[in-house]
Image (cartoon, rainbow, N blue to C red; front, side):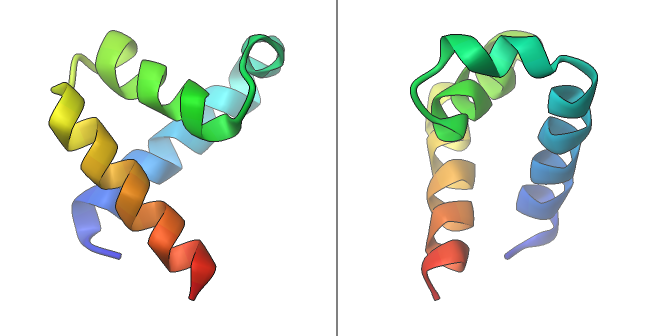
Length: 61
């Protein structure tokens, strides 16, 4: 996992810990990550998808 992905995943984990009720409105944590990246952090959609894909690939290996 590259450094940017690791940083964003840690940022999402910290945010989720502080706002656990938000996760209830999402089907998966990845759906919440996407909204966190694009709405809260204002990251472009393609970058958000790339970060999530890289993280998911790391989980699968």
